[in-house]
Amino acid sequence: MPLPPASSFSLGAPLRPFRLPEPLTGRLVGPEDFPDAQVLLVAFLCNTCPHVKHVAGALAALTRDLDPQGLRALAVNSDGTGADDEAPSAVAAEALRRGYVFPYLIDQTQAVAHAYQATSTPDFYLFDRHRRLAYHGRFDETRFGGGRAAHGGELRRAIEALLKGRLAPEHQVACSGCRLFPLAAANRRASPAPNAIPGP
Image (cartoon, rainbow, N blue to C red):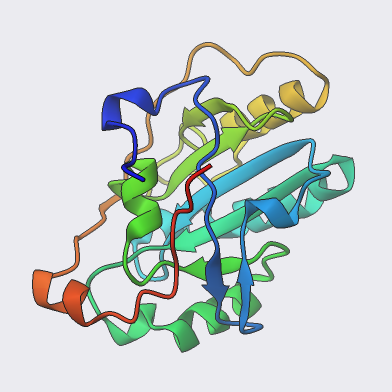
């Protein structure tokens, strides 16, 4: 089934389902594995981008803190560079090193990145209990190289509002970070395609 046009994936749009490999466990994991989540976060990350490194520790802490309240998260690595530092084994090692309490998945065909129109890392998509996009914005106002530690205040405020049954803040600032490079056409044809975006 064709995906909706890029312009349609805006606030209020329904979550786009997927299942991807989790290198740490070898399982296929997707949003449907968390039917009771009050709030669901889909975060596009990678291992080597300095902007991701800037927020990674605070993201791990934020998700640990809010998990008991009903937040569930999935991270997706859609890196297209083919670098060893972004390979499945490196994704598994990064999840352990950072102490992520959420699955860190690998999107080897970039099908999920394309479905979400993700073009950079980090990027955060927050869905409410009805699985409608409620927040698509930055982690906080700090920046890599800016001399201030990341704290995740803007994302946290959105999550806490949704957990309380309120709307996420209307003012949402887009993420900035490292460009998500597309796969080369030859690599895309050769990929084993272990993931898919099923239709409804």
